[in-house]
Image 1 (spheres, protein in one colour):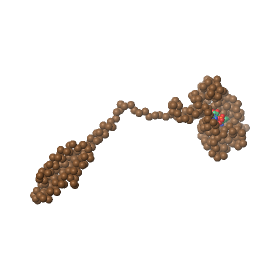
Image 2 (cartoon, protein in one colour):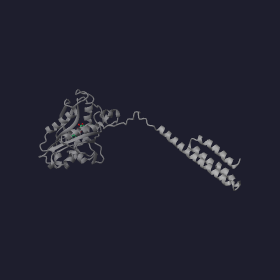
Image 3 (cartoon, protein in one colour):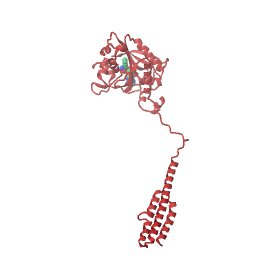
Image 4 (cartoon, helix red, strand yellow):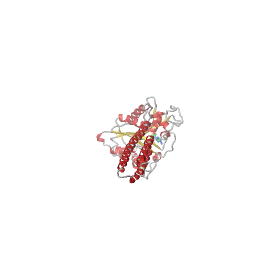
Length: 345
Ligand code: FA5
């Protein structure tokens, strides 16, 4: 075979193979085998040295023509393969807009947060300000400023978790009373505040007690504040939270920081007052402690107790929520069981 014939033969084979190629790798291998440094064309052209001066340029022109033709065809094939890849991708990615969408799970606020916000709204409507307190408190504010000196036996009622002998996890929201009284300027008007937050006690957990729970403190200090103001305020709160039919009772109690002191109970949601395991057979569930601010507490804040008087209360949100929604175990608030939390959307 002459070199011309060899090129013609290579061309025939190349034109036969090219249309059958369907992927980039095979195409590249083909290019190398035909036009590459060690490819067939190079091999054929090695024979040029034996040609006459007249024939050599003719063969060179033929080889160039062949190289240009095949290079052009390779380019076309490459574009064809790329277009096929894109078409396939698009086919796989087609979006069926008629398919039903995936629902994004929506959470809801914890029932204790909802209860707190509802109570906050009631008091905001009565002109109270909302104050934040500290969960890590000093013995001074948690006890001493609440008229509970170091050796006072009533400290036993509220044992807690101590960080040092002077720093503790607060047992109630009452220290916010002292902090707010210290900061209040009575020339600007009466003091009316509530303070919600988390409190801690070394209590044994049972259906109505937890070692960590929530309270809302309330405090009003002004001239001529009387027990009737406290009673009216608590009545309004209970009516708004529970409706007019739910019974509330006030019974005498003792807190070192109020005098006189009361505790308020609400008739049990489960037995309606007959007595059951939730209310420990009493028919009532205690929801808050309250009373008239003790003169010592006012004086320690630099408030003249002959001119000013006040009432204060501390209610437990868990108890309020239990009564409101018929939840019979306080531990249900903290277990994170979605079957419970989803009921309060
Ligand atoms: C107090 O904590 C007083 N600081 C309340 C107070 C404030 C009285 C202002 C006078 C003036 P007591 O320990 O009773 O009081 O708690 C108040 C309320 O917190 C209770 O009525 C109850 O609703 C709730 N509570 C008390 N202990 C627990 C507990 N272990 N688990 C859940 N709730 C509790």
